[in-house]
Amino acid sequence: MSVNSHLDYLSGKLNLKQDEKDKVKKSIDTLSLRLNSYFNGQLKDHFKFGSYTRGTILPRKADEGSDIDYMVIFTNPSNYKPQTLLNHLKNFVNYYYRSSEIRQSHPTIVLELNHIKFELVPAKIDFWGDIYIPSRTSPFEEWLKTDPNAFNKKLTDANVRYSYQLKPLVRLMKYWNRLNGSYLSSYQLENWIVETFYWNCTSLKDFVYSTFENLNYNFNDPQGYKDKVDRAKKIISQTKEYEQKGLSYSAESEIEKLFPDF
Image (cartoon, rainbow, N blue to C red; front, side, top):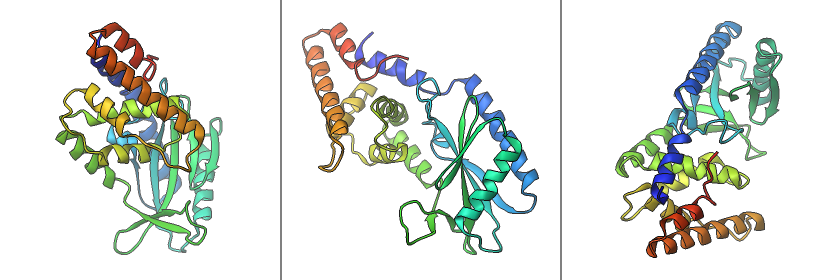
């Protein structure tokens, strides 16, 4: 295979297969029914969001930390604080999912099943329809305003603009990020890719090369992360050099150092 065929093959493998989609969908449907039953009349809405809805979630074989973000909007007439709503969700999952792993990871309740992990996010909504979730970044604010699916359109538009190469690129880069310690959050990485301008890129290989060439780090980033970025840049440079010399086998072997099969 060539560098591009390897990347195309791997990006396809990093997409959820139908049997995994079916299992996840069944779990989502069950969760939805149980939320309606348990919180009868106490919820304004609940829905999935995040990388699963964008088509950039990785299969569990590639990332054991893959999860589905699921927002639970309470009517909250008593204006309960975030921790109270988190406790409500914890009681809910303890009631229905006693044998599963359950823990709080502010501002979410993590529910880990055999084939997927859910991050349940409590939320409230105001008179104007603005959604608020518990704040994790500021000790001075209890609630943070959010638009949970706003990024979806941004990614979709960019994917179309770049001939449907951006979502495969995102999956590859999330895989590399996971292999290298997941220093960047999934959203942080996806947003950076969408904000990056790709000049004269046509194949997936072009997008991967450009992404690593544009990937930088800050002075305060951990040295381990800096070393991994520097290593990636060297591998990309060596891969391109092999290609220029017509050494396609060596080029493919080199790129596999960044993106090994699984």
